[in-house]
Amino acid sequence: MSLREVHLIGGTRPEAVKLAPVALAFREAGLLRPILLASGQHPAMVTQALAAFDLEPDITLTVDRSTGTQSELLTAMIQQLDELWSVRTPAAVIVQGDTTTSLAGALAAFWRRIPVVHLEAGLRSGDLESPFPEEGNRRLVAQVAALHLAPTPLAAMNLLDERIAANDVLITGNTVVDATLAVAAKKLPYQNPAVAAARAASTNRLILVTAHRRESWGQPLDRILGAVKELIARYPDIDVVLPSHPNPAVRAQVDTGLAGVERVTVTDPLPYPDLSRLLSEAYLVLTDSGGIQEEAPSFGVPALVLRDVTERVESLHAGCAKLVGSDPRVILAEASALLDDPARRNAMTAGGNPYGDGHAARRTAQATAALLGLAPVPDAMPVQQSTAEIGAVA
Image 1 (tube, one colour):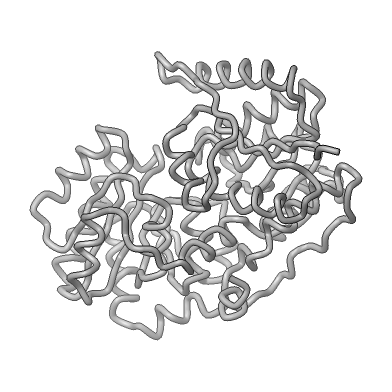
Image 2 (cartoon, rainbow, N blue to C red):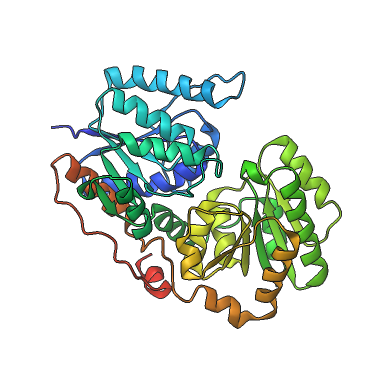
């Protein structure tokens, strides 16, 4: 007898990275057949990310975009998903996080009365304007999800505070921890030639910088780039790698802001194995990326968060991250303190990673099977886990 299908829908690289370990866990469990569905939002990046796990999309939607608006994208994806699921109806649909793809998948499944499983549920900044539109998207998905898989106890509490039934919430950890530990452990050669050359020729301390969110574009990004230039001038023993956003205007702004600055490597978006390896080798990360905030503690790397607010406050509470915004004075002061005092730097991540223990994907697969009556409900993730223990499970 053929297994019932569960469709894992992703449209961005972070979604693909976080769904990949789940697809592998479903395969290992053998209770449901995982179908990786690329929504068409960023199809090339989804395919690239899945390739790091020796996976590829089973289904790829084709979305024609002329205006580039969120409404155009949402409408096209919902229409195509509805057509697909009218003839190939899965037992459940898993959506991840807070993208337009997540919202489209959740709504289309809900309207077809297909159970929605929300991976990375419960993140909240408390501000609908930041991050925009992600904060609104994840709140909307929560209203139609049948199962809410929270990465942390705080995320679970957010859901309970919104009157989500406790039996519908499970703390799993974040599958990005599973993903980054597995990929970094392979120690694959760098695929990007510029990064490979920069890392091979240097024994300097590495600072990884990412500034991708829309609220970072424009003047905030100029201030961040100015702080990077000043750090390079102050510290001759550091190198910077900055994977730029693919938006041409953003890339032009980065290239202009760092033109002629030595020991800085600006790249296109990197393959996930390259990014994971860089993160594992970094001394410090300057980032506005939520995923990197979750991954960095597993490698003992502190993160200075280039945002004024973050929904990933667990890392702030654990001390492995600090909010610095885009003020160059604050960025310089906090980065210099860690560069000048290695003991202070190491102390930031001594408590381990609050976001996962490397078993989130297994819990996700079992919880989905439990929702469908095929397995017992798994135990929640233990609250405390040390960095050494996390490394051991990888």
